[in-house]
Image (tube, rainbow, N blue to C red; front, side):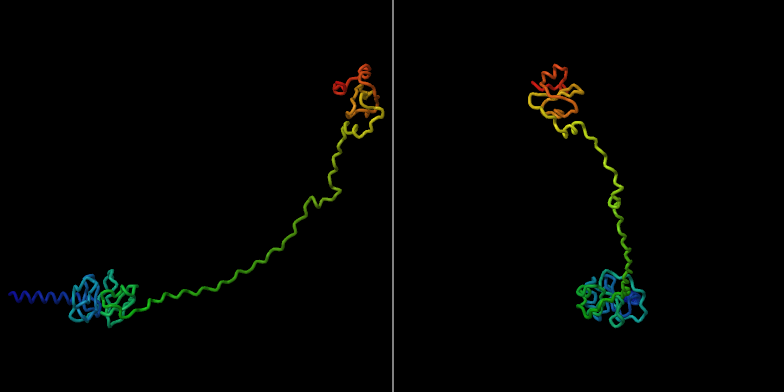
Length: 233
């Protein structure tokens, strides 16, 4: 009875192994504990760096591979060594696995080193840049001469006549010739206004009518000093 139970357990184990193997990519010889597949010929070291071997297949299954599971964080791709390499493979390790890492050293860490390194996929060719067409030059508008200043264009005849300034009486008196006979000690008495002017002042000897005399005589005749300023102190 015990032998029968053991035989059934072995059969179930083999059946489970076959089912798992049927889901693995073609050419896989085992599955690692982190979910990746290995194509190494030897079980020893096949899942080094991938938490060890979870399932080991006695021989590569011939059944069609199921859709690949989501890629784990590991850089090793589950691709058969003998078959075509995955589209995103960047290299092949010495143990037969493929790496998708962009780093050459990290891609095959724990897989006996790098066997072959594939060149990165060439980026899509950029569309040729059209030759820049120079913008047409815009013809500059002819410069127009600035109109002459109004002040320069105005004829001399159009100039406004200068305002005539009427000379003040003091200015007229300053330009007149003093009557002869005057001097210090004498005043000039204006006959028209009966005002006398001291020696050295503006109207001294320069009114139309008048005569020289002493200040005392001028006061005797009723004349009064110009603006009330007497000549003698």
